Image (cartoon, rainbow, N blue to C red; front, side, top):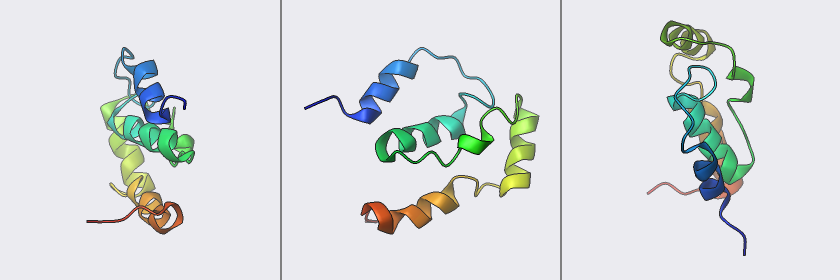
Length: 84
C-alpha cells in the first residue's frame, strides 16, 4: 500500500514559504483537498494575485469568501463525504 496522497503532499510542501497566490492559506487548503480527491477547485485562481490586497480583491471578485466552499459543498454527495 502506497503513502496516502495527503501525506505525500504535506511532506512535499512542509518547507515551502508562504506566498500569496501560490502557497497561501486558501490555496494550501485547496491543494490538500486536491491531494485527497484529485479535484483542484482553486487551479484557476493560482497566480492571479501576489499580495494580501490582491487576495482580498480576488476573493471579492470571485465570490467574497465562497471561492472554495461552493465547489466543495457541491462535491460532498459525489465523493461520499458525510456531515456529522
